[in-house]
Amino acid sequence: MKWITRERPKIDRIACPWLIRRFIDPEAEIVFCPEGEVKTRAEQLGATPFDIPDVEFSHYGDQCTFDYFLKKYRLKDPALHRLAPIVRGADTDDHTLAEQAAGLWAISAGLAYNIRDDYELLEKGMMIYDALYTWAAQLYNVRHTQHPTEQLLLRVYQTYLNAPKSKRTKVPAWISDLEEMIQDHIDTNLTLSLKTVSENLNVNPTYLSREFSRYFDNLSFGEYIRKLRIEKAIQLLESSKSTLSEIAYLTGFSDQSHFTRIFKKHTGKNPSAYRKSIVQGKGNTKG
Image (cartoon, rainbow, N blue to C red; front, side, top):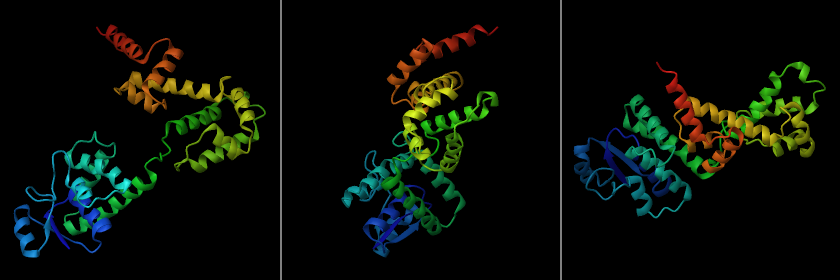
């Protein structure tokens, strides 16, 4: 089966051919031509036009052509429906639909800029959507090393490394093993926790939890993590324009209300009042 669309594809006109070849017709032929010639050449070639106005396979309301293909062919694969808002957000410039939409747009725009041949562009684009599909099918819940908990654990370890040697007498053997374990997993998607650390070090979690306080401000693992989260939140409140919800996420809290409650417990002020006091303080220094 032949499909035809306008030249210089970026989002929908790469995503739809990928969808056709991977889930509808593996032998499909995709043709690109100037926009004004699409309908005429479609008749000449016996091809189905898509992603142009006034044809069946097109945009409908806020839905893009990729959405219509899913509906038309009744494709129920959950991974495809995770991809749909990403494609739609990138194609309609509404990046609020999915956090990955802006990245897809940036990659697609750069690819189109670098590759002038539409058919080569399609082949390279197919690889992008193969990767996105794998992510949507198997990896969408996986985080990279920048997971807040992992970073906090790394900071805990760095705090220990930077402590004066006089404070590190009789260092437990598991400290060096902890260094090796973190190094081994620093570029993986592993989410470290006290339980995971205990299992990997072959150290009883109760013992590890008890001994932890000896090396980190006389605080338990959980207390120390919360302390670091609050310190990071204060830094973000002072130096960024992130919303309170965004700061809550960046510092590893489950939601804004939990963040507000813990922040107030540690500082005596809720985050919004703290930020307001910072602004007022800066205002009083002017003039």
